[in-house]
Image 1 (cartoon, helix red, strand yellow):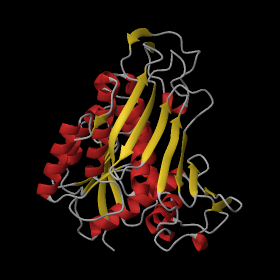
Image 2 (cartoon, one colour):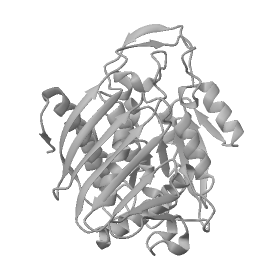
Image 3 (cartoon, one colour):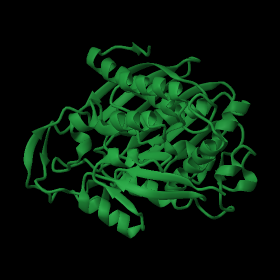
Length: 385
């Protein structure tokens, strides 16, 4: 079978995650990586035997052999790189948020439609087998009328004033941090499960550390090397939020609430939700992704453990190992890539129906983030336009 030729821009945590999981996908040939750090891109290219490495991402996009681009750069580069990829006729998988504004995302959606380009945003949590199963349960009416949705996404990697990363910088990460970074994941998954869109929000945001210490040497915060011992640095003002609480309503009138935090001690990647219906409830914890809690009023509660033999037919393609063999975070990437590259081989584009998040979903998430910021500033309900 013919190989699809791929290039990755950005060689940090996410770029490496994309690279490692792309190597699990059949008939994908990664021929190039790009990063502005020469040492980082050279080391990755050598480690994974990738023939081309660039310190200028435009050179990678200009490579005529490359058909698909993975944009794994910081947020401030997403719009420019995604636009260039579309104009070059390349299919594109972008890290989230799609851009730092809904205006930019709307432009990318329009351009991708015009050029008929296949797009994706890496909202990977919808690609867990049990999330596909839960979506089909809700779609079939198993939960009955949805009464309430609630949950949280908690982390502690920015707990200390000395913790620093480019995401806290408004110029690089955007006007929102906790909501745009992890809250957007929560919103995307909930909207995917419900088959509905968030249309109104009321939000309260808070910046715990209004001053942080920026290290004078690079610190790999994602690998938890930044800590309270990292005390030397330059004090900088922080405008992006550490925590946030959001009440919301959907187009169908479903009510919900969620909290996000990047300063909650003891929580590493605690993404939880519960959906309460008139017949039953479902709940899931991302850190225990192979278990789905099922709650009832008139019978004992249950726990569904991931097993392809027990999943509904639409979800089985997302489970690659038999019961008792856990699948986790990397497998959610793998599922996205499998479906994206199959869609690419089938000639699909942004205008076609696909199961993964596209640039249109990324645009909708930008709208939610901006509505949350506006609601916090005005301290009232904001309707999404």
